[in-house]
Image 1 (tube, rainbow, N blue to C red):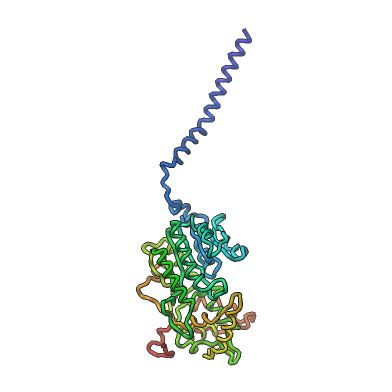
Image 2: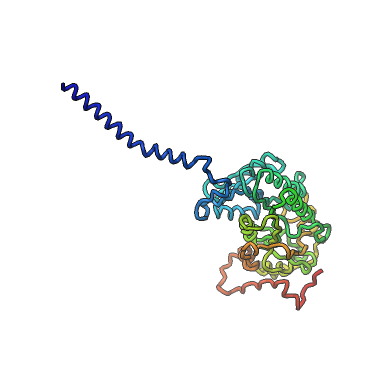
Amino acid sequence: MKTTIKMASSVAVAKASSSILSRARLPAVSGCLVVQHRNNSSNSLITSVDQMKRGTGGRSSFSGVVATVFGANGFLGRYVCNKLGKVGSQVIIPYRCDPYEVERLRLVGDLGQVLFFPFHLRDEAAIRKTVQYSNVVINLIGREWETKNFSFDAVHAEGARRIARISKECGVKTFIHVSHLNAKANPQRIWKGSKLLESKYASELAVREEFPEAIIFKSADMYGSEDNFLHYFNLRSRWSILPNGIPLWKKGEHTIKQPVYVGDVAEGIVKSISAPDMAGKTIECVGSQRYYLADIVDYIIRVLRREEFLRRTDRTLILRIKAMLLDYIPSRVWYNLDKLEREGITDWTDPANPTLEDLGVNLTQFDVMAYYVLFRYRRNAYYSEKLGEFADPEPPKPAEFYSEKPKFAVT
């Protein structure tokens, strides 16, 4: 009798335990059913990467932009990558240099949002791998001197055509190409003409042919930290010894420039990705003021506090001979014959083309930023001056200042 009672109680306990376990497992099972229902492929609403936006903005968000930036290690490229990462974009950086040269760009975005991939400009398979998952491709590749392996046409025209064609084949939504403001079919000729400007114009035609809705940025001379504009005129090898000065074509009195801050160009590039009605447009990147090159160089001399030692000259023969010899150096050169040619060309804009201001960019004032960049390189920089001991350098006059009272003649 007692044995029968024990068996009955054991069965009751087992049934009760089974019921408790079933109830304990029920939430997990039902939750699994709900997850399966929510992730059913037939009910998915996400059809493209830009619909996967997450967060309220910033580097830890995802803006929906997956951008491949060619030439990211260049002067403009570093600013573009930083602004892309700032709004929460995933950035893919193809590189051909030493990996350590692009490693610092890993910090422009959140963890895992900056990816690197080695490539070669003539390797179509490598280019395809870097753009096949992107909805934005930005081509910033360019160089200011030729080598035995890469001519201006090979880099600017053929390379841009190859990247644009592959991007179109991979279904890239937005293609952005950066050219030069003075890139024209027949640019102004100072001595022998600029091959770089001719190749840049050929690159625009090639990109338009392969990717008609591409956005082309035509930039004037860009300035900023580590630039090749303000620091270029502060380069000692650019100065002449007899007489001690800075040689310029016709002393810079026949050339008008409209330099633009590099950060403004980078901001315009990022804003054009989401700007409406910009597909197929050509955007001109110029600063807020036009200056004679003579006034720009004089202002640089004043900021450097070298008025007693430097002055503008028009004796460019020795400088051109040095530039011709520098063309044979197989490394980076600060200037060459083509650079001196472009230096004397006046910047002209087309009123029919939109500008950075049309994209909502607040342009940086040239004299303020130039003073900030060059002040550390002034003469006797370690002298502890008193407050107000040295007067601030007089800013350059805009070119319009001489319209009524001409100081320089324009050809």
